Length: 135
Image (cartoon, rainbow, N blue to C red; front, side):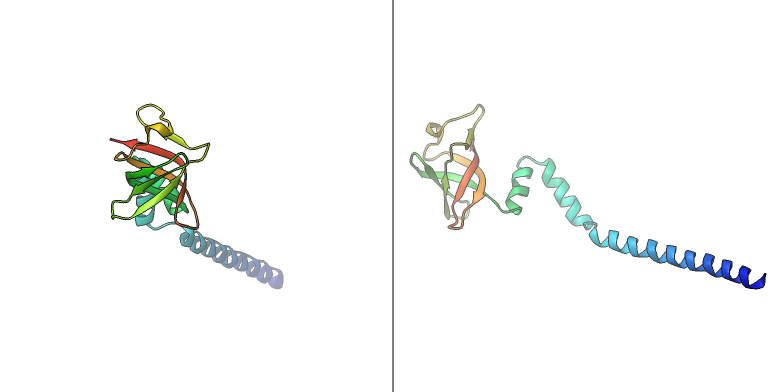
């Protein structure tokens, strides 16, 4: 009898140790995958601000520019950045151009301020998915 009681006690102790180790390991893995408070708060703040979704797309490899239209043609506009540089924004058939109401490429005038979001191209230009005309 003594040996069977020792075996049962050994099994129970082993189960408790294994369960504790599994819990501790899972806790550490979960903690490593949880964003820090700063990152989580920043993402939440961006998601709730106007333009926050666009800022998130920019961080995920999309392009975004905010500035004044310097020139335009039927297929593109050139926008001056706030830092003095410029970007070429290509218009695609699917590009949405909006203002208080939806706009057209004719609404894109030199001197207008716009925010363009889209896909960044290898040459530094952007193929627009959306252009907002800003007052």
